Image 1 (cartoon, one colour):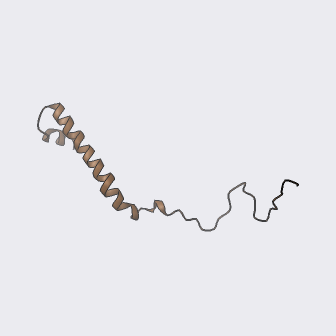
Image 2 (cartoon, rainbow, N blue to C red; image 1 turned 45 degrees about the vertical axis):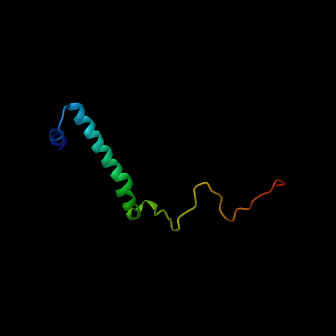
Image 3 (tube, helix red, strand yellow; image 1 turned 90 degrees about the horizontal axis):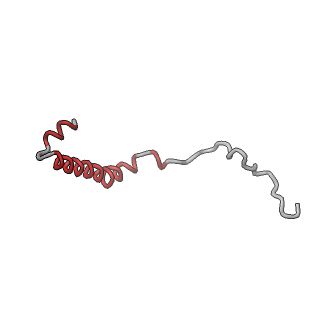
Length: 71
């Protein structure tokens, strides 16, 4: 695939390098600014709700009395 693209780009190797870098940058910008914002609502990464479960290990239980400075 990359060899085909390299052969289709006209010019000497440094022009091919610049054009291929521009193509890669354009593809990255298209993904970053168009595709990822469009797909973001459909991805499950923001669904972080945890129902039930045990409290954090080492966390005090709710019924543990809190002592003030006097003891």
